[in-house]
Length: 141
Length: 108
Image (cartoon, rainbow over all chains, first blue to last red; front, side, top):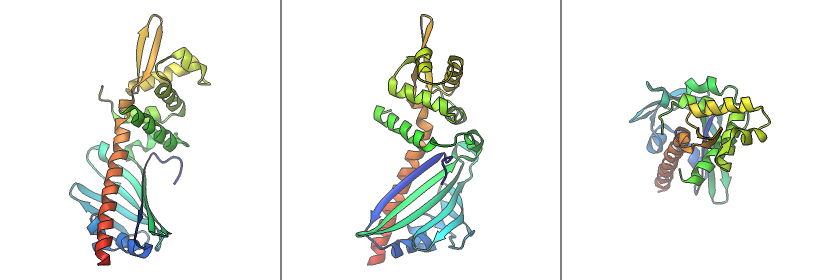
């Protein structure tokens, strides 16, 4: 993760199951299909696969694997309308807790055609965006 | 509200000085170029230029009063950014719900 990342979504949840079990659900084709999408997932570094949704396919490539602890892959979505295009990375992190596992998903990325515009926006972009969203939320916009 | 291209919006917010100006207008309400320059650490022409770009992106509006223009933030222009985050958040929350259901079934 770098400060130049433009967009980011983090979802975190404590789940009352051990990390090994969650890891299996994150990395086994037929299990991934049950909670995420149809896929041809493979756990090898550099493995390319697709997640197939009703609304289109997401192109993925395994970027990093720490068995039982973290999994990272690209999440790229091509679309005729640039407004829907997305180049991003999804990282799952599993942390054992007393009650089970703290599962965290962080997605960061760009719309491909906007990389250029954001090149100079080093540092603090994420923080600014979060602040702005807080402001907006506070105003009930 | 004008239907501004997301490109203009992203370009406008890519600059730290412009983000700072926009944030000040969000938090402090309507202000003149003079008032904005006082706290900006950049020249008045630079502030005016940045306000012009923010205005083009629909992020600020100017209201003429006498010889002064009073600028105000238009937070609704941020909708494309907020929408993406909100949408992806809802997507992943729903996926996590399904994941939990699956894990419960795996236990049985």
